[in-house]
Image 1 (cartoon, helix red, strand yellow):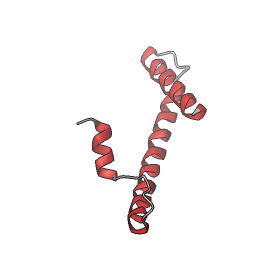
Image 2 (image 1 turned 135 degrees about the vertical axis):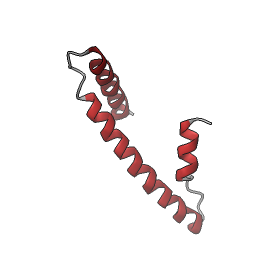
Image 3 (image 1 turned 90 degrees about the vertical axis):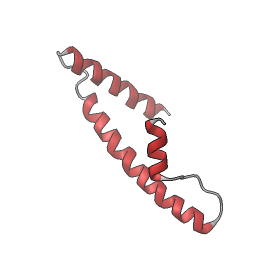
Image 4 (image 1 turned 45 degrees about the horizontal axis):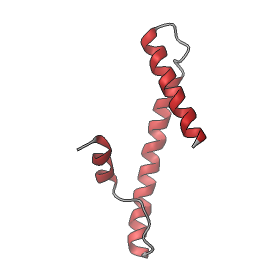
Length: 75
């Protein structure tokens, strides 16, 4: 089982189905998912600040994080 599958199982489905009771639960799942993604994006943004560092490992991670954030923004 992939990490994605584990997280999805923990958070629950977020897709609406048009049934009020089910969609209320899924909205709560969506809120939890958004909160998690926001925190992860903040973490990635923090790493992206290292893109111009002199140390290779920090620069490499920073550039990867920066490129990811640019791709997210474009999407």
